[in-house]
Length: 244
Image 1: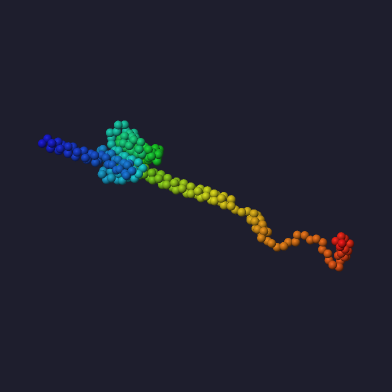
Image 2: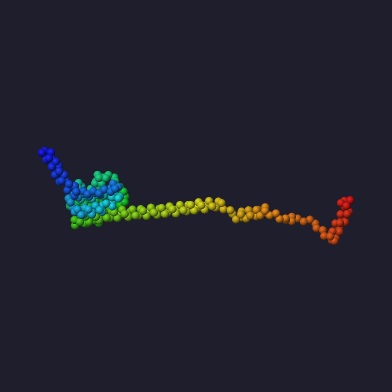
């Protein structure tokens, strides 16, 4: 009897806590380990709104953790709570937290890690001021959904800009490499180029070596028979020692 009563009490206790846990927190975990968390202690959001809000948070988990907290019993205020929540939940990991005090109409925001570098505090505060007006009409879902859409849009733009920058850097690197290769090849070819004058001298030298034609180098006296100089030459020959 006692064991049966104890088991029944435990089951009832779990059943009482189960709805609170289901409505209090919705968790989505990305394959990269980042989480999307919604805390709605007072069930301000409907199940449909919670589902839609989760869908808007999922893409942000590609860059870091994201949390949405809706309650009224903040220790200080909804403005300072996001920083406390991030440190307690994720430490220094990349994260964003949004907090709403639905009674005091306060809307807080904070970020950490890579997400803080992607989205500046000034830009985030501008968005927060734009969406905070919906708290006056109790449009909590519209307020949070608008903020999440702005955050994801900025992250997508940052990623696309980064991709284009990477592509541009690759193109510039390729052009520089091609120019360097051109100058290196061009310079190496110039070292083996024969100057035209050197080429002509080589041809002339080769022609002189292979040309065996006779050339008249010089000419001595030429005597023509019957001329006076020819007769004088004959007389001198007989008078001289050659005749003897």
